[in-house]
Structure formats: structure tokens, C-alpha cells
Length: 113
Length: 112
Image (spheres, helix red, strand yellow):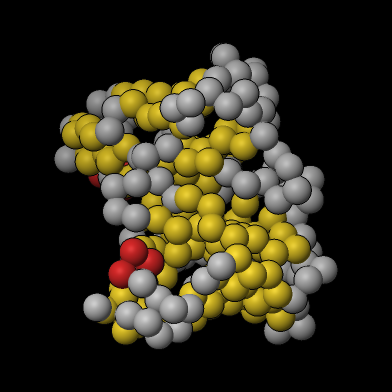
């Protein structure tokens, strides 16, 4: 089992460019999440999905869109990148359970110039 | 509205001694409390959890304490080892909420 994988691992964008981050999980999990990690801010939830075809806003959704067309994939899109979106992005998934233990991918480091 | 705070951004501890990481929260409706560990260039990994109906949970060198009246959570690592050097996040969960609320993290450095 690969667990949770993220593509790409690194990316540099210019302001205004667009890109899509791909998250894939092979654990048949219903729930998937996108977080960003910034120094001193911890992990902040961007968007999440409770099942195929569903999405919901998290704590910091502005400037991002998501899609969950297949149960195993969760895409995060930036339509017009801004320097404030420079961050490390983590995807996570869980099958739920007693305490919602989430399994994380290795992260994508994005720099917007 | 910062519901979960880890007031120490960093902590240095001598190898073999006890490491104590703290987490404070404001909302008393949380049902489970988790700790995650993160190494550089990797995603966070689950470490240990505790239910709101307990005040202590132990797993090897790791013990989590919950003081509900003080809305305070702590993780004790004893004895500390160099491999424990990482960033630690507390995360809180409410039944039916489908989300975890993460703290800001504490960077633990174990000094050999």
C-alpha cells in the first residue's frame, strides 16, 4: 500500500499562474482533506470531502478550489496563484473511526514568485 | 478564533530526560485529543490519542495527560531520544464534526 501520495513534490509558480495538486489514497477512505502549513500557524484546513462527489470549505478556502470525482483522488486547484499561497500543502485521508485518525501525504512545497 | 494553542514554539531537552509538550484549548466540546509527530520533508504521523472520558493514556515512552477542568493537554516523552526530535501537533476532534482542529505545533529538539 502506498498510503497517501501527492503530486508534485515541489513547484515554483509566477503570480497569476494556475496549477493543480493531486492527492491519491489507496486505503478506500471516505474522507479526504487539504491543509496548508505555514510557520507559526500550524495546519490549517483549506477544503475537505466526506465522499466521492462532495466538497466543503475549511478554515482558509479563499483562492482555492477542489474536486473529488473519484473516491481515491482529491484535487486542489489554484486558479490565479498569489505570493500569499506560498506554503507547504498536505493532503490527508481517513476512514473515520473513533477519533478521525488522519493519514497524511508527504507534502507539496509551493513557491509563488 | 484560535481554539487550540501550543504556547511553546520550540523546546530543547537533554537526551534521557523527560520532554513535556503542552496544548491548551478553549472549547469544552471536544471528544478526543490526538498528538501527531512531524519530521522535516514528511507528512505528520499519528502518535497517541486520549478520549475525553479519560485523564491518562500511555504507550511505551509516550504518555498523554488530559485535564478537562483546565482545558489542558500534555504529552510526556520519557526517556527522550534523538529520534524524538520533530515538530509535535496536538489535534482535537468532536464526534460528527468530520474534522480535526490542529494546534500551532512545538518543535522539539533532543540534545545528545
